[in-house]
Length: 192
Image (cartoon, rainbow, N blue to C red; front, top):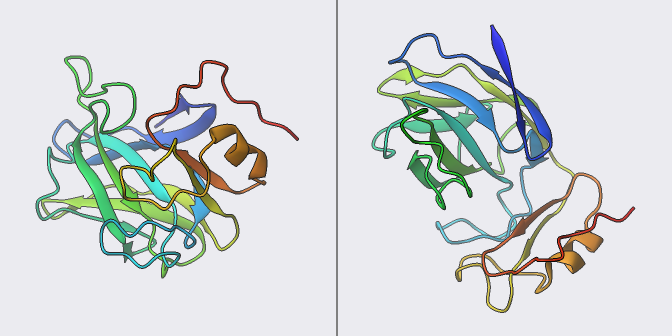
């Protein structure tokens, strides 16, 4: 049996967990992205070698990474940014680890050596591998960052100081990350 999740306008299919103790991936924030072109070097990576930063949510993943691993297409993530309970702001604006649901999340970067095409994201916790979530690894598409003033917490080289300017420069298959600090009271407009 599968479930449907609508997240930021993206419909994602997710497997239901088999039991309450088995690690399980439920959904992801992105369904596709490039495997290279990311300028981040905050975890020792080389600029432009690795790709998209992805967040996956699931159950029984652990409140910290410990010895757990995450792969895409059998290739280890090039960086793990966060592994733990899905609380704001760590895993987005909403706290999804609460008394109703116990979601945990992993934020990771696609490695530049990941095979292209449809690949499975798999977490292995205490020697037990999750069912895979599909992610389309691409060689096309650009990765952009926008931050008001300084780079994103000093970690990412910022190409844009204005979020709308970044959005205007983006094309189909591009990914744009908006760093903390913007006040977007007027919102953003996607132009054709």
